Length: 217
Image (cartoon, rainbow, N blue to C red; front, side, top):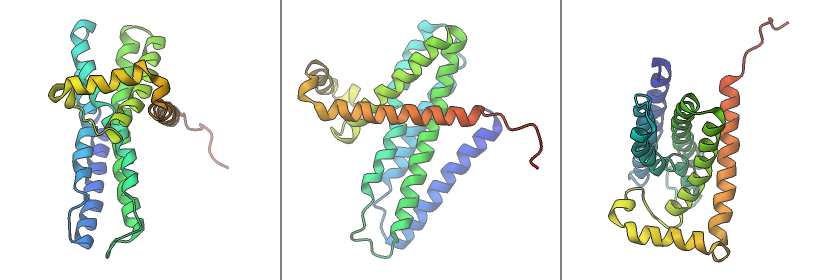
């Protein structure tokens, strides 16, 4: 990660904290403090992916990639915090401020996730092929949709794979083996995963777009 991107990441975090602090001041309470924790969780995949750059052999990279995939859904998960936007019991807090706050955290978290995914994609492309890299990328985004469902609607956390592995695996296996009985699960996974794929492709296109060489008349 170059210094410019690192600086942008830090400024984005500071912006989120500033907006949240204004909200705290106006509301007189800290009801949205969980956004800071969610943003921290969204940054973990980025940190893990930066460590992947130093690893050359797949056998050593697999454990790190497994942990990365486990935490990666935390980045797009913050998008679903928009469900906390409510016009009721607002006190002195304008609705537009809450919208600005939630969007700020959601977009910054998603940006962290996309950065980490791009690093993982480049790692696979260099060591295998572009086809393999894109397969891993698209698969990770779809699996992320499933992970977001587990977190938002079933209230599982990334660390529950250690704390409550049996119950978590039971929930996952029951949905895999009986997909027709869990239509909401797979509808959300497909829909949210597709949204993430389009968002990532748009982000990639914007990042690689070359400016016009000729002057604007």
